[in-house]
Length: 57
Image (cartoon, rainbow, N blue to C red; front, top):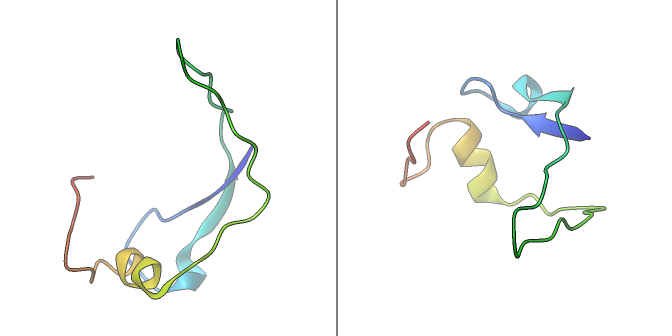
């Protein structure tokens, strides 16, 4: 499947489109096909490493 990845902090033009393995559901889980997603202002801050909450990488 295709995925948009942020490999280093930066502007949106630093995002890369790559093939990644499709997920395999575990017991009691399902895989949902996603056709589109929304991108919001916090997403823009996260890829620049400027969001107020910084999860471990």
